[in-house]
Length: 254
Image (tube, rainbow, N blue to C red; front, side, top):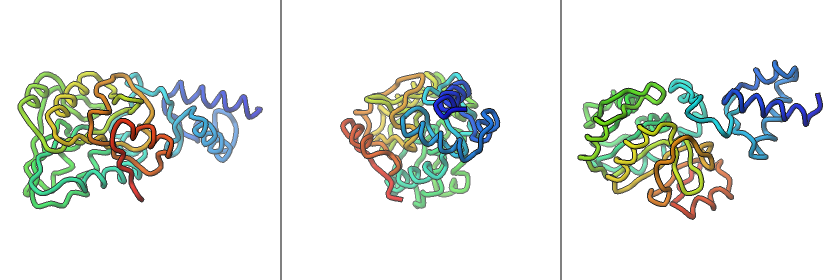
C-alpha cells in the first residue's frame, strides 16, 4: 500500500473510532508498529489527529463517543501530572477552593501539603482523592444526579447549592479550549461549572496541552473571563502566543 493511501486509511480509522491503538492500526493495515508510529507522528504534525500514548485520537472526538472515566485517567498521565502540580502550588493556607471534575484535577491532591484548606467539589473521584487528608482539610461533596462518564454530580440540586457558595480559587479540567471559548462534553455539567466559575475570585483551567485548540459539544465560558490556563511546555510556541491574547498562560517547566 502506498504511503498516501495508508495515511488516508489511518485517518479514516481514527475518525471512525475516536480513539484507536497503534497495534490495532498495524494489524488492520498489515504494516509494522514502527511504520504506524511514523505515520501518526506525521499526521499530528499536519494537525490531522492527536497523538496519545499507544495510539491516536480524532480531532472531532466528542460526547457521542466520550471515553469512560477510568480510561481518561490513563491517557496523557505525565502531562496531567505536570499541570496538576502547578495548579496545586498556587493554593495557600486556609483558602476556600472549588475543584471541578477532570482527571487532571484528581491528581492535584498528591501535591497539596498544607495544614488547612476548605475544598468543595461536585466530583466523586476528586472527593475520594482527598480521603487521606480529611482529618486536616474540610472537604465538601455536593451531590445530585451522578454522571458516570466523568464521576461528577450534576443537575438542579448541584446548581442550587453552588449559587450560595463563594470561593477564592476555582480549578477545572475541560474537554476543549478553542479560540475564545471553553468546551465540555455535556451541557448539564457545564452549567454547574459556570455557576462556580462566576462565584470565584481566581479561575484556572487545568489541562494537558492536547486539550488546547480543540472544541467539543458544549461551549460554556469565555476564555477572557478566566484568570489563566495551566498546561504543559509541550504546547507549541505558536499556540502559546495565540491563547495568551485571551488569558494568562502558565506553562510547566518540566
